[in-house]
Amino acid sequence: MERLCQRPGRSAGVGRVGRAISGWCILVLAVTVMQGAAVWPAVAQPGSATPSGVASDTILAWGANNVGQLGDGSTSDRNAPVAVSLPPDTTVTAVAGGDSHSLALTSAGAVLAWGENNFGQLGNGNNNNSSVPITVALPPGTTVVAIAASHGHSLALTSAGAVLAWGANNVGQLGNGNTFNSNTPVTVNLPPGTTVATIAAGTNHSLAITSTGTALAWGGNGNGQLGNNSTATSLEPIAVTLPPSTTITAIAAGSSYSLAITSTGTALAWGGNSNGQLGTGNNADSLIPIAVALPPGTTTITSIAAGFTHSLAVTSTGTALAWGGNSRGQLGIGTTTNSDTPVIVNLPPDTTITTNDGGFFHSLGSTSTGAALAWGSNFSGQLGTGNNTNSLDPIAVALPSDTKITTIAAGGGHSLALVAPPTSTTLQVTPPNPTVGQDVALTAAVTCNVDTPTGTITFRSNSTALATVPLTASSTATHVTTLPGGTHTLTAGYISTNTCPNSQSTPVSVTINPPPDEPDLPIPPPDEPDLPITGPNTTAGIGAAALSILAGVILIYATRRRQPSHQPE
Image (cartoon, rainbow, N blue to C red; front, side, top):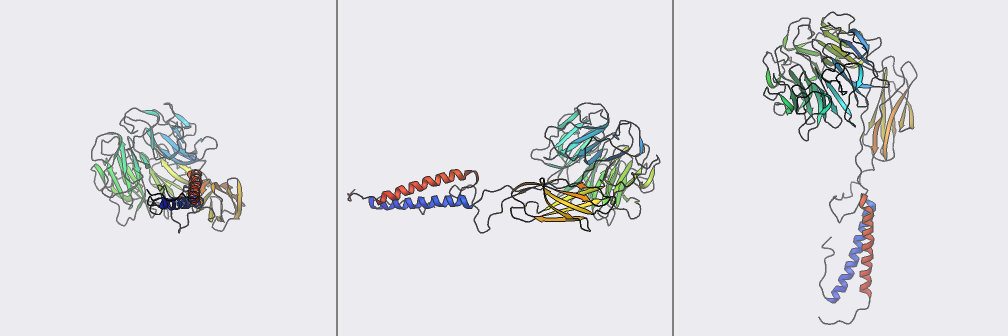
């Protein structure tokens, strides 16, 4: 606006005109500022929706228990599943098995640990074994979103994308720059600016996937398991030498080798290969990632796992593949012959595998129907079949009656499973970032293991009931509403009318924002000082505008006073 209010020449008459023009300019500017302060709303931060999930109050465990790794309060082996003695009112979302210790992630973001603690792998500040779950001493304010366990160390991924580690550190597997064991969690020294999305723990090395799809590795490297084209140990994370333009989506760590899934559904492997565990068609170690020789016609790999010297994978069609060591039948192909290329596991007819895991010499799989399968060594009862006989083919774990599982994990000689609750309710909010006055669809879905869900869903915002809606034949219910501005904690409560237990969804938090600016109004750049002032500067802007009005009035008034006769300069 500099050209509109440009100062005129300096003659006396023109000066009067100039003062008048200047006064009117100031008035216009002042009014514009005040109108702008009223028209443009302050910019609101976008809201967020917390994804809902299903947590379980029951973990089953079976197999070796010499140091309490089953968590049932004893040190007796079990050849059939028993319940882990969780603390009261605890629900769990993930489990992990180490050599002789176990981990669980609670729905509150805490970590529980039990079993052997000779290296401090339980992370509770001492080195005493525990036959029941105890709380890992996480740093204050830490929320954990993923866990991993191996021979003598443990890992945790925080909600901030950092990695914590504790336990054995003889070759730097804790990644904190030294080789001292730690019985409390320490922070892994990630490269500056790195955020981690996934973690995995091998016998004496550790792996991570970053938010950009690259891979990091640290710890022992005697067989090239760090994948950086060397065999030198690394006390801190270093980049895995991936093939060009490769993005990693999943990762697994074995005794001295590593596995990964790429964004295109192929598999990579590197490190030790004495038993063919890299799946490359030979037994040569590899210091960098190389392609696993998947069977012809394999579409994509969706899940991958590493045992001691054998590897497992699930395909997009729900079949299972295995390769590597097979001395106890851990490949599940009816023989004890090793295989240096992936072979198809002999699943029961019409079985679809969803997840798998490998122990020292046994393998586990969970099915789409919530059953558990096991095969390989059964010396300590780790197959969970009620006996101690090895199996060269997958057989059903003897789960308690009417029990279904959601995930499974293998320790060295023991097994873990997370039990699906009899009824679970999930809540989805659409759109996830609604604005004031916008329709919000709340959709609840109920699953039940004992009957077809019937009954109603009550949707609530904070503690206020919004609506009660009957379940449809597809076990869902939807309510469309509008919500006032601010943060809302939304829940869906299922009330059953048959044998399915009642259940409640995990709360979903959404922030309702002011409506977006009108598309035909210009958005003022934030750094332009002469555009309308918004937000916390509104009061100051209005005050400045008022002073500008006063100055304009004074200038205009001055031009209206009687002027003296013209005097030559």
